[in-house]
Image 1 (cartoon, protein in one colour):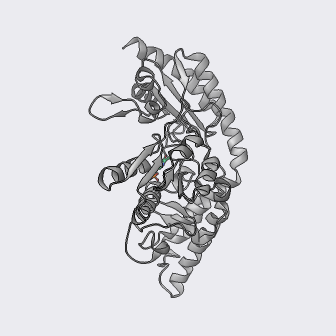
Image 2 (cartoon, protein in one colour):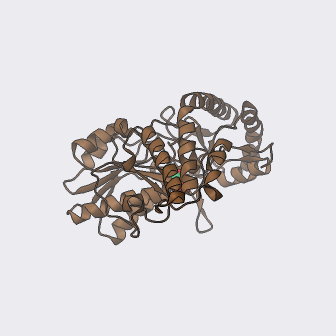
Image 3 (tube, helix red, strand yellow):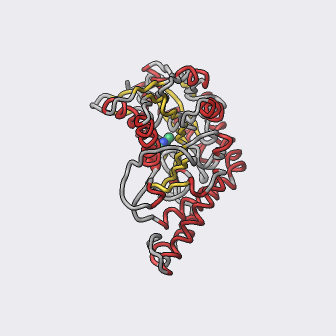
Length: 385
Ligand code: PLP
């Protein structure tokens, strides 16, 4: 990548930490065994897999047998939501509680369960900051509720949900509780005991690990119908020959991220706050979207009134600044993001959404560069409308 490029899209993905690349290196052509083979070569691979599982379990404060390695965050969410929903259905429970701001990995899954498999889905609304009220979750519970799924932190606006409070409610009513923690992996506390969750999904590429590998934590005793059938890998939840190199990468990345979590959060949130204050000061008719304080430390998301977010993105890209937008161009006409819609943001604001997510390599100079370029970009785009 061009050295002068300013990359502010760490919520989309992160570069792999060189220490992670190094840790993965032996597991391509040196320790290449199949973890199911009981000979020496297979056992060496299994040892690495066991170690990686222990590392992740320690961070999540759970037992290693509760960790399932998967192919990505989407897969973890699917295995959890489908698995618990179908197990519930077999026991006569067909009601699912979730929110309207979930990532598609959960949102599209519950939609399909609703439309094709006879489930009833309650979407508990969020407030203007994107937060769901735990009391509203409690009120939505029915005798036939099979699953509650609420994301830990939102990918678009960075808002963090009160997972521990919802966890207490779910536990008291003995309802399986899943959280999509894909955006939270590198930045927040992942202790499943403190959070009170039964299922938790992670993806390595959000915390400087490789793409295409994820984790699903499944609390012992949680009933799931296995979505995939095959060999017995990953206790049958994710059959298929195990990707040892990537799993070692995931475990290494998670350990590094969690070890430096406090200092990195402090560093990056300081830069993020500078960026937010600077944008709000220098650009007229802009607001911060998402919760002002209960948000991921690296996340700044804005709505610019009367200007198209995608045009801002493309113009900034020409200036060497990578950001993202929440709006989606589906039928040729840009639609505001469903997250901002659910938060009640008026269309003329929601269409101008831009997300900037900082990371390890982000510097003061990067923030200054954005603050130098962005006001003129927005002014020019508004003038040309
Ligand atoms: N959940 C959230 C909140 C996400 O942000 C993402 C990816 O952006 C996913 C799930 C899906 O993860 P993956 O890309 O690893 O499938």
